[in-house]
Each structure stands twice: as C-alpha cells, then as structure tokens.
Image (cartoon, rainbow, N blue to C red; front, side, top):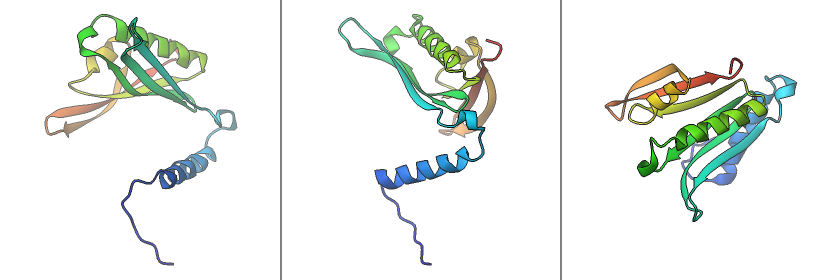
Length: 143
C-alpha cells in the first residue's frame, strides 16, 4: 500500500478525521454520554444589535468547554464578562455537565477566571517567547 502526506485545506477530509476520532472515542465512553455534543454560544449586543462580546462554547460528553470568550475592550471591567460567564455556567449545570474547562494566555483573563472559581491545572511557558498558556477547570459538582 502506497500512502503519502499532503498539506491542504480540505473541509471534507477534515470532517472525516473529526468524525473518525469521535467514533473511536465513543467506543470508550459510557453509553449515557454518547451523542452529548452541542454548540452553545451567547452574544452580548447593544441596543442597535451590534455584537459587543460573546462566549463560544460546546458541551462535550460531561463537560462544557469555552473555546472563545471576548468582550470589547471599552466595556471590559463593567461586569458583562462576569454575566456571560455566569449564564454559561448555569447552562452547563442545566446540561448536567460535571465541569467547565478553558484556556487563556497570561496577558488575557487568568485573574478573571481565578476570581470566578476556576483553578489552573496546567500551564506551558515560553508561549510567544514571553507568555504562559494556562489551562483552567471549574468543577460544577460543588457549585
């Protein structure tokens, strides 16, 4: 069998890889967690309907993962990020998630997450030569 490696942007091939890994993983997870995948996105909008921030997440098996979380710079530290985070945490509880996980860089929102009960479980130094990449988790069982 001859195989070769290619470098390309191909949505169909990417989807094949994602689905093949998902099917493999599914064989190893408890049956009651199968099929538990859902994107959940919350947006912060002004009175004109302009997006001023948002939190992009997904429920995967027994956790919720925050992929992207942003609030426009001019309205940061006004409580909107905390409100978005609290709302997504309530949704995670409704979806019976056991924990939430997120990652952030040292110049981003580490203190914000810590203030909201997230604990660092890992980090990588020398990111961008001068920053640290943090991985955080918040258990919801004791929430």
